[in-house]
Image 1 (tube, rainbow, N blue to C red):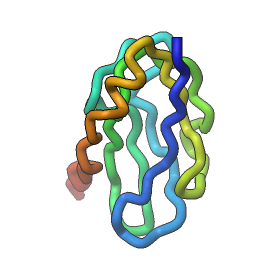
Image 2: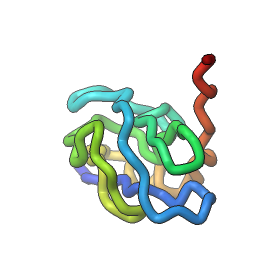
Image 3: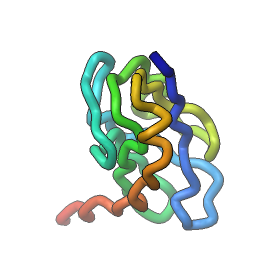
Length: 101
């Protein structure tokens, strides 16, 4: 079994950090490629981050409410297919719908 660490990506806004707003998965959950793992907030937007891996959530490394730097490991995914999943490019982060006032 392979353990893959998913790091906070640069969401293309030139920012160096983001806040973990809400985890959409929990340890033990099975995840698929492009399934939303977490919702983050940058200074500019709310963004959902998809999984680049297939497997089972091992550990959430950063709790909701925390601010983390780009490149920091935020979650681990356990998989027998990590090599195959890594070959498939992850979808670009999708901005979450803006809250309605």
